[in-house]
Amino acid sequence: MWQWFHKLGSPKWFFGIATRFMPWLLILGLGLLAAGIVWGLAFAPKDYLQGNSYRIIFIHVPTAFIAQSAYIMMAVAAVVTLVWRMKLADVFVKAVAPVGLVLTFLSLFTGAVWGKPTWGTWWIWDARLTSMLILLFLYGGVIALDRAINDEKSAARAVAVLVLVGVVNIPIIKYSVEWWNTLHQPATFKLTEKPSMPAEMWVPLVLSILGLYLLFGWLACLRMQTEILQREQRTKWVREMITAGRS
Amino acid sequence: MHPIRKKRLTIVLFLIAGIALAVGLTTYALRQNINLFYDPTQIAAGEAPVDVRIRAGGMVKEGSVVRDPGSLKVEFQVTDFNQSVPVQYEGILPDLFAEGQGVVAMGRLDENGRFVADQVLAKHDENYMPPEVADSLKKNGSMGQAGETVEAATN
Amino acid sequence: MAFDSFASFIAMEGHGPYVWACYGVFFLLMAVLVLWSLRSKRAAVEACRRRFETTSDTGREAATGASATFARVNVSQD
Image 1: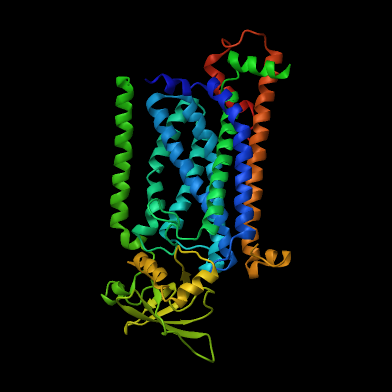
Image 2 (image 1 turned 30 degrees about the vertical axis):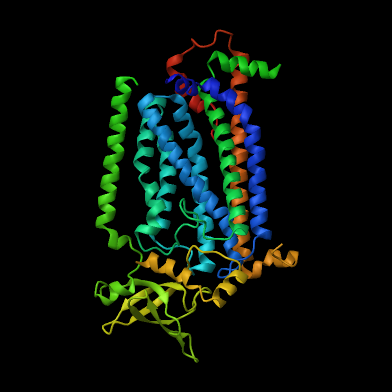
């Protein structure tokens, strides 16, 4: 029953699968992202209240959304690292953390620039913004901790524990706007209800979320391959692959 | 599943549950500090301290905005459709400030229960729509929908 | 099209600077991230290739203990 699971953990197997899927992830991701952004910027109607400044939503929500789901994936990988000692899970955490950092920063930055014309301030210490800032520090902490420990196995475990400790922040980010009084408005997309915007606004938003998601997948695969190459450069399969690729 | 892995998994799950409990209790204890602002009901009930810098939030009551013609002084009522608080402010208001819109004001509550603000921020809800749709909604008088969500958010 | 002209598209009724600053920083950072990741993969492949050219074909046995730490400093991460 656990056979497939352990096969999934084989760096060689993953490397081959990733190579096969990566072009599709890149092409589809860029295409959907471009479609969503062009539609959102130029064709979607403006908002009755905020005018055109709301067009920032077409990158603000995707970056924030994927920054959070990347962290959830990292937490799952951290459990796998701690319980099954699977190397590939640790490779994933290390490959994805810098991407998560950039996406979290982008969501904070676009939020600040959006906040100025709509709320009247760049920044406010409300629960949503503060918990998102904590996510940025968590990503930074994961990267720093990994670099601070030289031994690969100790680094993997320490990083996994840090990731798991930080995962409680994710529901706080999500529900902050419901649990407490915040300046930030509640989510536009809810699982159980219709989105609180018309289709000509939410369709481009969904497109750019999907596009950025696929692009994130491509980046994750690419960076995992890099990490695998660095770790497994002594193995026979890497040698065979590299020498075969040259001829 | 291998017994040692089962044991590790249990430890990991306990770790997560423990941290979640600790953080949950902390945020629950600090909930009044995490809340960005007091709503008019809390202020009317005397929960907000007098003459301390606090924030008050709610909707700008329809028909309550009085602008001083000679200066930037403005007075309005902030309501949560249950209680209202009079707010005094001098300065530039955000573009989104309007009657029926959400605001968060920073300032002090004086002895007369009046809120003297030195900063007013606009709060908007999660509803987005094209201007034409908003206009027709307003005509049909069903714009209250947007108000309800802000009301829910401020409670 | 939500705008009458290209100029009004750029101006966004006064919100242009905010919108374009966001999109500018988004594209810039994403491009940096993508290029950096591509470069480090290429560097990793190159490092492997150099390694195989200089060492003999015995593979795995060589210094398994220190390999991990050595590999981590061997390739520049930026």
